[in-house]
Length: 381
Image 1 (cartoon, rainbow, N blue to C red):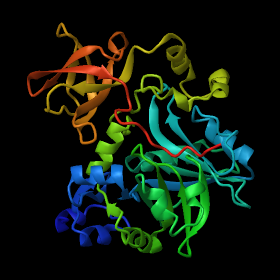
Image 2: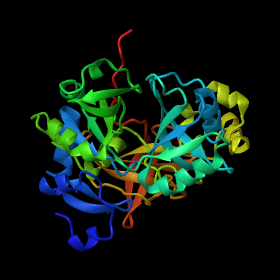
Image 3: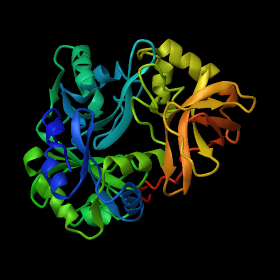
C-alpha cells in the first residue's frame, strides 16, 4: 500500500485510487506514486505473456503538435529528430528520438499522424515521464511561427498487452482487432472517446489507449472485468521490456549515447541518412558509416545470479570493456539476462565475458536480442 507521507510529495495518475484499492505496492517513479506490483512480478510477467495485462502509463507526457498542415508541422519536428516524419502516413505511428547537437539522445518518443478528418495539421506525441518537463519546452522552443505545442495534462494512458489483448479490447472497441501494428485511430470505448494505437513496450501484441482522465477508471475497470485481464505493475513492465530487448531511457540510452551506439539505427530512414540535416549528424553518420567505438548488446549469464545496472563487464583476460545498463532475472527465459555497452571489438554475439557482481566475476556471453521472440501483430496481406 502507499505510504501517505510519500504520497504528499508525489504526483498521482488518474488511476491512483484504483491501484490502491486493488492492493498495489506503490513506489516513487518519475515523480509519480506508481504501482510496482500487485500479485508479484513473476506472476504478472507470466500472465502478460500468456493472457492480457493492464498497465497504467498515465505518467507519460502526451501532447499535440499543431500547425496549418502536415507538411509544415512534420518538417518542424523532423528538424530535431533523425526520422522521416513528412512521409508518415495518416493513421500511422513512428518511434523516434530527440537529438542534441552532439548526436546524443535527449529522449525517445512515439509520433502519431491522426487519420481522422480535420486532423491534417496535427501530430500526437508521447514522451517519457522523466523527460517531459525537458522535452516539451525544448520542442516548443524549436518550432517555427505558426506551429505550437499543446500539452495534454487532462488525459490518462492505459496499455493493454499480451496475446489476448485484441480479443479483450474488441469487446469494447469494434475494429481494433483489424488494426495493423504501429497504427492508430480515434474510437469509442463503450461510448467514451479514446485514441487507440496498436503498440506497446512488452514485445507482445497490444494497445495503448489515451483517454480523458475523468473517464479512465471506467475504461480500466471495464477491461479488468474480464477474467483474462489483470493489473500489472512497473516491475513486470521492466522485465518484459528487457526480455524484448527494448531500451529504457536514462539507462540504456541517454544524452551521451547516439542511435548507432544504442543499436537503434532503424529510426533513421534512408531519406534522412541521405539528407543528414538532423542535430549531431556529423557524429552519427560517421559512426553509421565507419562503426561506433561501443555498442549496446545483450548478455546471457551462466548460473542463476542476476546482474544489475552499473556492473562492470570484463573481457576474458580481465580488462574492463563495458558496463551494464539493465539486468535481472528473465521469467520467460528462466535465467538472468542483461544489456549494456561494450567496446565494439567485443560486441559479436557469442563473445565470452565476465560480469562483476559484488566483487564476484560471473561468466556470461554476448547474446542476440530480443531474448524472447517479439510477437507484434502483423496484419495479413
